[in-house]
Structure formats: structure tokens, C-alpha cells
Length: 144
Image 1 (cartoon, one colour):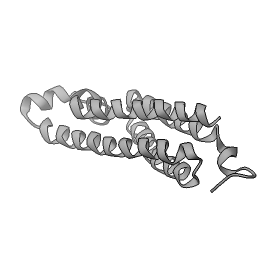
Image 2 (cartoon, rainbow, N blue to C red; image 1 turned 90 degrees about the vertical axis):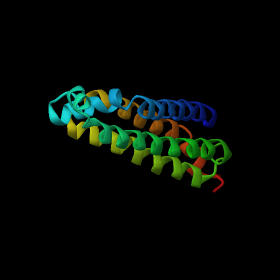
Image 3 (cartoon, rainbow, N blue to C red; image 1 turned 180 degrees about the vertical axis):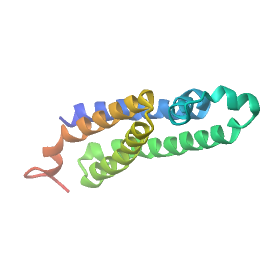
Image 4 (spheres, helix red, strand yellow; image 1 turned 60 degrees about the horizontal axis):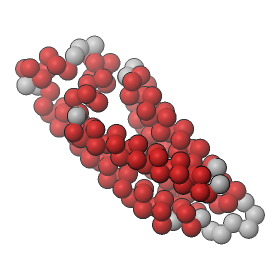
């Protein structure tokens, strides 16, 4: 189960990395959906007036922050999780649920369904990847 979980978690990490890079490179597309859901207006109108720039800079910072959590999670996966170290299991659970969970709640509260779907998929995949080898981490004879 550990091998299957590692594959699932690797897919999620790659998915999160791509999502973060897209947020950095194309913030108007990724964040435009949320902006429209919250305000009812298109981001295009603000871009033409020059007001969208600060909003897009903040979106890029969010993408960069996401990327800075994706990279260490990869190291945790391959240097702790694969060795069945409980701290790695907990680290992935806490950081991933905070990231994907917050994104899901935030997108849902704002009505940005298009942004909520990838967050929900990421959260489900993280939970699947973590609970597949649960017994290997916390069952009898598990090494801490």
C-alpha cells in the first residue's frame, strides 16, 4: 500500500505544482474566476483601467507561496513518508489539508466552483494517499 500511496501523493504534488505555476504565470485566468464570482464583474474591465495589477500581484504571491510548500512536501514524501516515519505522515496531512482545505472552503464560500473543483480533487487524493498505508504507519508493529 505504501507504494500505491506514494504514487497517488506524487500525482497530487505534481498537480499542486502545476496549479501553483499557473497561478504565478497566468493569475488573470486562475484568479479571474474568483474575482467574477465575488464581484459579479469581469477582471477584464479592471485590467483596462489599470486597477487589476495589485490584485494580480497578490495572486502571483499566492502561487509562489503554494509552490514553496509543494517543494518541501516532495522532500517529505520521498525522505520520510517512504520510510514510514510518522512525522512525515502528519506533516503531509496537516500542510495538505490546510492548503487544499482552505482553497476548497474559500472557493466554495465565494461561489467559484471552477476553483473549488481542483481543490476538492486535491484534498480527496491527499486523503486517499495518506489513508491507503494507514496501518503501516499506525498499526501494530509500526515503527514511529
